[in-house]
View 1 (cartoon, rainbow, N blue to C red):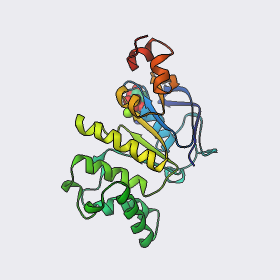
View 2: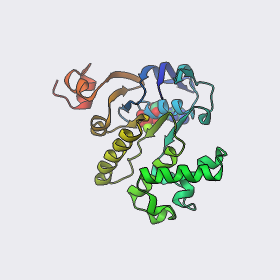
View 3: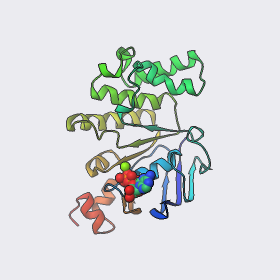
View 4: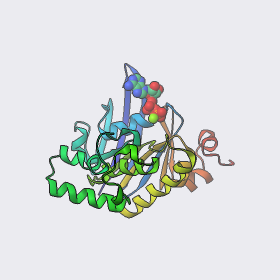
Length: 238
Ligand code: ADP
Ligand code: MG
């Protein structure tokens, strides 16, 4: 179970407001993509959901509980970082088990969860390798594995594919979607790439200069864009 409720959320840095009252309600199991041009506030919003950034005003709820004052590890979320955030000196298995170790899971439980994630992500033959001995796609799967082992209510992705080449990026989109279909975990996915948004999302949140321009399914945004910004950004003919 994983719902996310964002209610009139604002963010200021040094007196300058960069998010101007964001309202979005995400249902359990949804794959929601936050999309918009660079600098529009996507990462800031995602980091506030994660608890990595303080909320200036408004409320964020996860599973009906206001999380404004909770630390990241108390929020039942997992952030998926880009693959270069792997620990280079640790094996694949150690990378995936590390957050469980921090959470004081015992050794048998860690091994069980790492084995399960490795099976889901097709990493079983690679568990003893170091990140340097993996391809880009394998590394990104390990980065996802680090989140899956914790079985969170919500996955948060911030442009996880932006440092992969074009071909791998397309392949990884399918892998992430397949993973979502398999686990059904509520996902909030940030990208500046409208094609990525259109192909991956159940619903898209189009952001621009710190506001939400429109929320809708890919088809709704394409067929009935709320304004010319959305039409031009999505590339619909309106
Ligand atoms: P996006 O992820 O959509 O590219 P960000 O959320 O990173 O956008 O940034 C939104 C706005 O907030 C930008 O104008 C950015 O310069 C500003 N910003 C982000 N982080 C900080 C920070 N730590 N201090 C000051 N301004 C910031
Ligand atoms: Mg960003």
